[in-house]
Image (cartoon, rainbow, N blue to C red; front, side):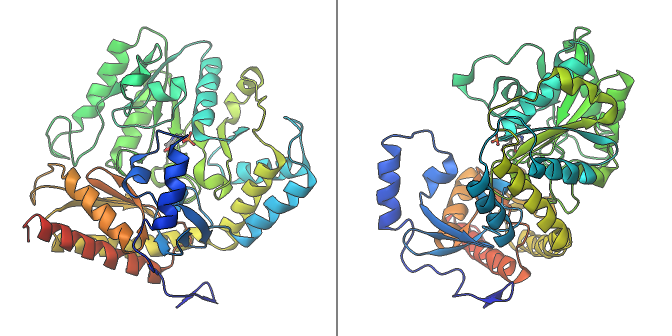
Length: 450
Ligand SMILES: Cc1ncc(COP(=O)(O)O)c(C=O)c1O
């Protein structure tokens, strides 16, 4: 088999039942110290040795097709030579100089600004997604003269710092109350409508409720709506196209800012550089992370030119944000995305995958929904055809069976998330779907479903 012109060994190549003995041993030693791993790791504790383009190899020598991209990060495939080279170059040259400018930082900022939609060109750089969201929310307060009330949808995920977490759904008892002024409104999730209505006959009642939430929960300090354009963590939840315009209008009518969190959807993942471009939406503020650094920790938020004055007051000073290695990784990643026409690949392979996923939906009783855009896709498992009753046990089984056959991917209860590197080939994508198909058939058999 060849991939990107290179001859590769058999892919996937499972030589010992995973997680193998070396994986188990390394993982056991790690969890003596570090607890709180994600379910993804707990369910299948392989320990990774290396990644190459669209594959990953564990410490036992098993090679998997990668349908996780770290966690939506490896936009240019694992260890892209140009990105790796730039990182190595700056590791030898200059690792940190606080928030001083470096040539590579200037080049990265210029490149990013040239790609951002509309007049968005005021940028601050950080390392993680939550940090970028938190900083964006600080900037919103400045832009809005101290107004602090923010709104988002049920099921949104914006991070683990206090404000970002307060606009997210997936907390647990350890998190306590939300930060003051943070409110969530019912999500326009048509597959699992909170009002059990059907689109379009529902007339998007959820948008009326959003207006009600903003007007009734708000106390005159309404500052912004913060949204994921496709909910990632909640299972690639997509909305009808008209939702975006409605949300934008709701914000404009109230002189509120629209913040779109593109940490997961940005940098080509959905087939356009930024997901908002699908809907002709130009937000006031955009947050970026994950794919920006091709796997290296790089994040940012950016605002429209008219709001850029506020960045002076929402200080950009941070220990690691915009460090030379991160900027080198970011610059190289953006250049590779352009030079290698990676968006074209996302659209071609994404279309192919959507076709194959539709076939899975036709063929399998427990596949209730398949959805997504570009290479941000999901399979939603249900207990009965035509219902939307989540089948989480089946989700766990399909995830584990497919993983054991050589597919590294991302579970979320009944929802299986497909997020390969943006360089994924159609050949490997086809093999991945064959594996999923087999894993679903075996799971249906296990539950006596045909
Ligand atoms: C949409 C979105 N925003 C913010 C975050 C937080 O990013 P990080 O985990 O890098 O802090 C995530 C992480 O999954 C995300 O998906």
